[in-house]
Image (cartoon, rainbow, N blue to C red; front, side):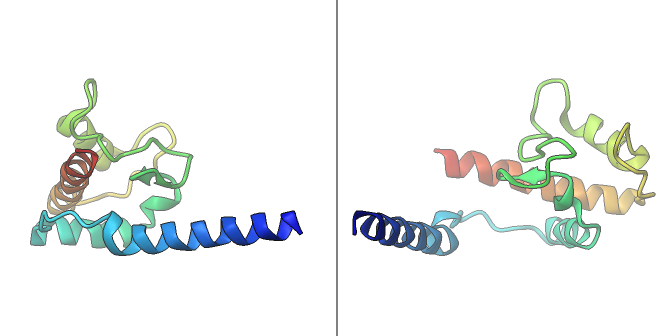
Length: 119
């Protein structure tokens, strides 16, 4: 009987937490620019989350990119170079300058919202 109570309690907590995360937990009042929205669309079309994580969600083959544009030793120039040329494990997607700018705008938006949500 204790196992059932524990299982029901855990499922209830999980459901409540999931409901909070998907309704209020990511409610950051920073609007996404049209350029960042285009970058998000590219992120989704190219399935970047299969290798990379943002906000701790996604694949594990590539690095976590939530704060890549503000990390010491990386930053915008490093990220642009990776987008334009690929890397050791990252294929060269042959992004145009505009697509790279849009992806950088999206990653900058992710960085700003992550910092705002942390506070």
